Length: 422
Image (cartoon, rainbow, N blue to C red; front, side, top):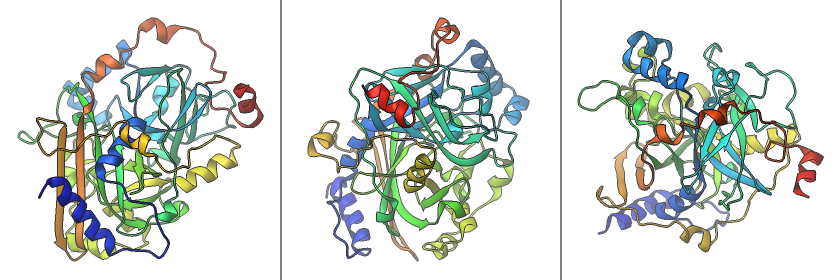
């Protein structure tokens, strides 16, 4: 039996046990979800200044520097295109992709889209500090609902959500938005993002990897293990799942089985149980923490926020995002339509198990006290960056130019946004 057929059969067996009375749209295959993800997932990173490059090298070579910056000096992350107004595109991501110190330094940021182009954004700093203070401006390219700083008790203060905009005359796909209310326990969710291999340990030596220039997008999937009210969780996280995500995928979209974005991934398996040994960007006290499958299984369907945050990866709830954007007066036209066949076919490839072809397709199925559990990954070698450092090394004159921050490419509210559409 073909691997694709095995995957679909396994996923089908799991979902048949979780049928609901309400009719649902046709479920999509991992290949179809990957096509949507490939077109809408972006890579986000600060522009590399000469000073930041020097700091990166020191952090790699100096143990004391690494101890001072345990989460790294440079933190590429992920995001998803959720709206378009004229020539302005809006990307939903997590606020911890924007370190406060990088904003204070007024670094440019880049957003790499599906065509391989990097869209440079200058004047990103919103001048609101951390913790956030002051009102949201109408001329900001970055709208944060929380902030990230190593000086905060939990590093993130507020909701770990942000929207950043960029300008382009090109046509890019906009991801369809759905509702987390439609997903149930043990339903499969799919997470798309750009892993950072430098934050992983070498499998042979156990040491942190050095410079790794090549990056490729990953699609990971697994079952939902819990849902809570975002107000009960940490920094707004409210959807929990088993997965095989990696550091760097924070900010990437979480799709349901119909191809709708229902969440924003932000806390992955890097700090969950036995998997922590694979990473070098975590506090040492986590490396001795392990959890047995029976412990995890006992909590599936539970609602204790502490247990869920400790055991599982998690995402921001998209409904919470809609609520807080309404509160600040932000109005964007979202795509609420089911993905069309044309949309799905635009970037459709067959997931292969042979690494020499189009990627690595790993399917994991096991029977335990939870029943059948299926998680999978696909590392898309056709959606890759050969040298991320070269890609984000913007020209120095671009970083020094004096450019106004206001305009129709910024995050606009209410009537001001309507004016720019004319």
